[in-house]
Amino acid sequence: MNLSIIILSKTDTIDLHTMTMNCINSLMETEHSISKELLLIESNKDYFNSDFKYPDFVNVIVPGSDFNFHKFLNIGIKASKGDYIALCNNDLIFHEHWFSAILEIANKNKDILSFSPKGTAPLLNQNAEFSLGYKVRTHVNGWCIVAKKELFDKIGLLDEKFDFFYADNDYAMTLKRRNIKHARVHNSHVIHLEKPAAKKSEKTLDKKKDFLKRYKIPDYLWRDDYKWVLETEKNLSGFLKFHDKWGSPVLYYRKNKICDILMRYKLGFLNWFVLGFKF
Image (cartoon, rainbow, N blue to C red; front, top):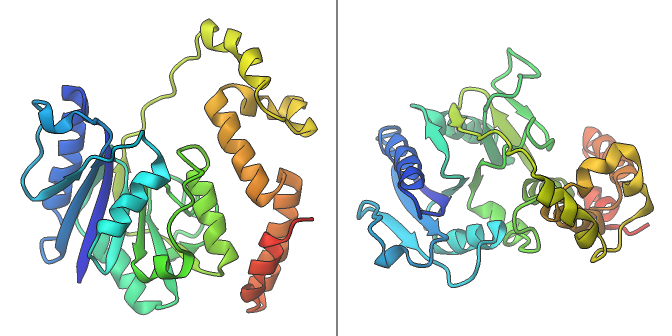
């Protein structure tokens, strides 16, 4: 069994290099019986002329374009040779048997093609080996997704309109539309070293009115309960891309409810029409 591990990184400080090396070392110190291929998609265009270096067994790829979360993952997907592909941030620490636990569930359930490790979110069912679903940060942990390579034959490459924000949401909905099961595996332990959100400066808030003028904003976003969407331009841009593709939150909620009922009655193949239909 071969595993291709794609890590996204930007190595331009010693701290970032150390963090990525800790991620790589934790990978190499686990799952010794698994044949592993490591591909590092590097955002620092001057990496090969810098003093930062990774071990020779790491295939470092430096795209010529600016960072785009899905585009950079697609570069790794196209270059990978493994039967399974792991899409990873560089701020992860892998624990022993993290992939073996996923492989065990995959071997027992051939219809599950996509997986995430347990993470830190509370388990919905403590006694189960895994939980099926598409909810981001509950089932789908975008910082570490493991998929059978055949998944990408079914869904194609990732949608590169999503350069960072809402990329994991789009992935989850793509799976649901295709009626492809995703599992959060409870015995797969990977630590995500999330950094606390930086406090917004007054300068950022002053610019808010300027960037809002560049977008056609749906009326519902002016309500108080959606103010968080308008805080930064990147968040707003990602939200609107998701809105344009999958619908407003109300429509998105209704379509998801219909799909849940269809899947309950083994009619998930109709999700394609429900989620792709423009009301």
